[in-house]
Structure formats: structure tokens, C-alpha cells
Length: 117
Figure 1 (cartoon, rainbow, N blue to C red):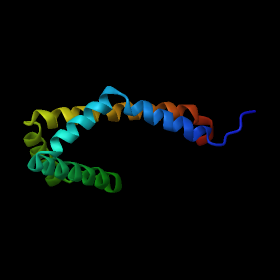
Figure 2: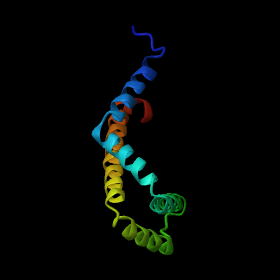
Figure 3: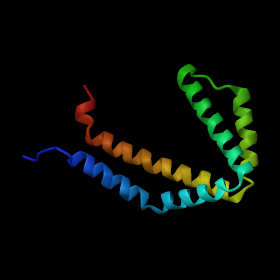
Figure 4: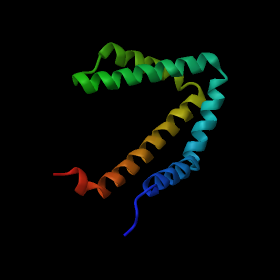
């Protein structure tokens, strides 16, 4: 029988290390670093991300979409994607989110017996 001890944490750390070695992650970090150097664009990107998070949280709690916030996000997005680096960053973020969702799904399926009753 295997002693659990630190093994799960060691494996999680291996997974994190592997994730940080992916091209998607490296490209994301490179683009983010580059974008941070342009204060105006970085400020707009942060505003967009903040409003995006607010919209998601509001939807999760109310089940409704704030149409004025949705319009603000659309306008900000239209402005942001004119910048090639920001457009690429948002694309990389989407790829990373898909990868993380796939990882979460795999883990969820593996522990299905624990979480389902």
C-alpha cells in the first residue's frame, strides 16, 4: 500500500511545472509582460478584465445579463483587439482556459466515485 503523505502535492506541483512549460503559457506571459509596458493599453485591458469578471459574477448570482455592461465590454473589446499583442494575449488566454477545463474534466472523471452519490 502506498503512503499518501506528500505524493498528491508532489504530483500537483509536477502538473503545475508541466503547465508552465507549455508554449501557451510561455507565450501568454511574454505577451502580458510586453503589454504591461504600455500603460494606457494595460489599463484598458485591466478595465476590460475587471468588467468581464463583474459580468460573470453578476450572471452567476442573478442569472441575468446587464445589457449596459455587455455593451461596454463589446466596445472595450473592439478597441482592445486593434492592438495585435492584446488580441494574441486574449487568444492565448482562451487556449489556456480550454486546457485548464480539460484538465479539470479529467480530474473530475477520475474522482467521480468520490463526488457522486
